Length: 141
Image 1: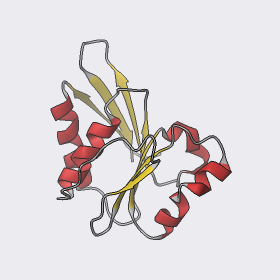
Image 2 (image 1 turned 90 degrees about the vertical axis):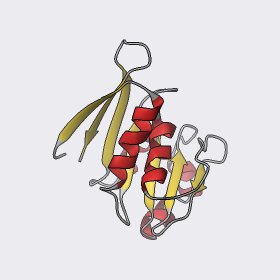
Image 3 (image 1 turned 135 degrees about the vertical axis):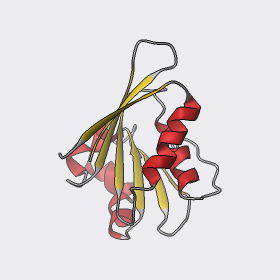
Image 4 (image 1 turned 180 degrees about the vertical axis):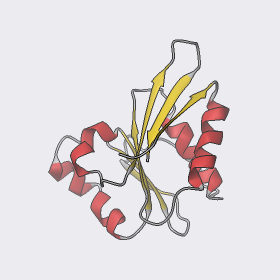
């Protein structure tokens, strides 16, 4: 990996704002891989990315659907890999099809598909800081 950067978010609104800023670095074929437990703010960051891309979509966690395509040019495609436990599961999500189509992919629970992530994926690790409501966001580009 290249450069590591760190940001401390004090609220959901700050996490969304960070996502909007990150959207400026994304282009067709970008993959943003999120790592972090339940409730860390992964979906909030995706909402911010969608806002930064001027998408009017209602962003929600695709836990049960596994994938949400929010449209756009290039399209923003949101994956939840929480229930993905092998290559067959991964192929069934359409992950590789969207990747080949040049969409911007945002992937929650990337730890479950780490071996399938492109080498140039932006890896974002979100964790608690120990202060109520704060999150440490570390990303590698």
